[in-house]
Structures are given as structure tokens and as C-alpha cells.
Image (cartoon, rainbow, N blue to C red; front, side):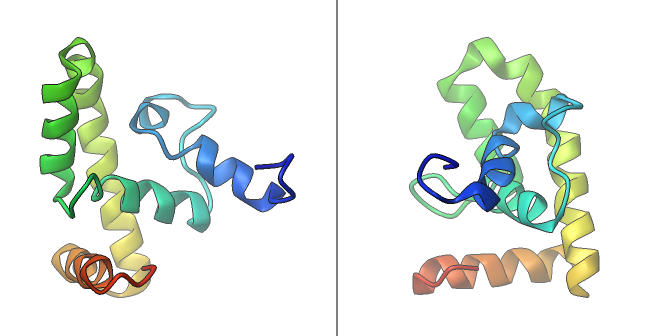
Length: 107
């Protein structure tokens, strides 16, 4: 992204993979990184809950099942943190993300 002139996206993109939740150096920090990480835990080819998304990843990549299970708690913690800052319960945040996804609107 830096080479494409979007330096501000480099950190959020580097910290959004689920494996970054287990890596102190790449763990999502700052609201753009947290928001991207939370959103990515909900989207595949459809909108999923965080648990459905991680379960799907573990099914497709059983060799990473142990790491994915470790990342599950951190994924839920980030989701709760973002919901709190947004002044919403987690279910409310997820409902808004789902509505935006279904409407084709960036959350």
C-alpha cells in the first residue's frame, strides 16, 4: 500500500490477519487497525459471526486450528473493545456491521 501512495493503510492491513492477534509486533493497535481486524473476523463470502469465521478458517486450514483457537479470545476482546468505544453492546455492533454488509455500504 505504501508503494501505491496509501501509507496510512499499511499498518491496518499488516495487522488484520487473524495471526496478527497472536503476534505482539503486529497486534492491531489504533482504531483503524482494530476496526479492520474486527470487520475481517466477520466477512468471508458472506457475513459471519466471529466464531463462524474462525471455525470456517479452521475447517479450511486444519493445520492452523490450534493458532486459530488461540486467536479466538483476542478476536472477541477486540470486538468488545470496539463495541464499547462505539457505545454499543457487542450484539449491536455486529448487527450494524451485518446491516452495512447487506446494504453494500462500508461499515
